[in-house]
Every structure is written in C-alpha cells, then in structure tokens.
Amino acid sequence: MAAPARRTRGPRPGKAAAIDVHVLDRQRMVVVSARWLGGVVRRALARQGVTAAEISILIVGDRRMARLHEEWLGLPGPTDVITFDLGDAAGGCLRGDIVVSTETARRAAREHGWSPRHEVAYCVVHGILHLAGHDDLDPAGRRAMRARERVLMAAAGLPRPPRRRGRRSQA
Image 1 (cartoon, one colour):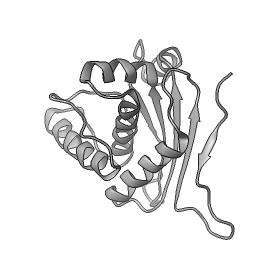
Image 2 (cartoon, rainbow, N blue to C red):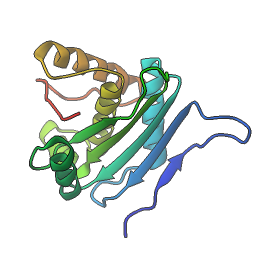
Image 3 (tube, rainbow, N blue to C red):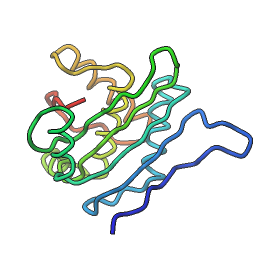
C-alpha cells in the first residue's frame, strides 16, 4: 500500500501559510521524509527570494513517470523530473507540481556517486528553478541553471551536485 499524502508544516491557526508544500509519496524504492523534503523546498525557495508558494511534490516510480511523460510531453519512457507550472504571473505566488521518479533518481545517484535521497532533492530543486522561470534548453541556460542549482542545494544544507556536464530534463 502506498504511503498517504503528507503535508509539511501547515499554517498556524489564524495565519495563512506563505509557503505551502505538499508531498505525496507513491513509491517504495527510496525512503524520503515529507518533512525533510518540505524543509529542502522551503530553504531553496527562501534562497531564491520566493516568499509565497504552493508546491506539490509527487514521488513515483518509473512506470507512472513514463505514463506522465508520454501523456504530457509526448515522449516515451521515464525521466527524472517533470515540472508543471500552475502559476499566474500576475498573482505573485509560485505555484506548481513537481513529479520525481525515484527509480531514475536511484540510477542517477549510483552513476554520480551520491545518495538517492540527495538525487531526489536535486530533482526537486531543479523543478523549483523551472517554476521560477529558469530554462535549460540551450547551453547558456543550462550552465546558468546548474550554477543556481548548486547555490540552492547549499542553501538547503545539501552537498554539491556531482555533475560535470549539464543534463537536460523535461519541464
């Protein structure tokens, strides 16, 4: 049975939450604490200067990711992360869904020599940057995005991503 939806630190009674993070874990391959991942998101958003956000994170396996990848992007097979920007440019609130495949993250972690949990966090940071308007479709954009990923990973208290060359994921 899949883990139930968990919400990290909801609003206090009488106060609206400026940063709202929901984590839904639908896989069993990598143990990822919703509270921990919510903290990663909050610290990355703070470093990015974002003060209002509604972010939902769906953690899945390759099979579900492949279905989403085909349905929404028309591309076969799984990918590491897909970002759905649900924001309204005039609203001032960053809104979006980030889907991460832990199977793909586990393979990438093994390839790069770090933990699958850190790879999942890296994918989420990558998704946050897409929501914030960054793009990695060309070499210059990819270099700028990789540099910003390193800054946000450090701000979240995580190790530097062990990437030598830019990788392109689907946003």
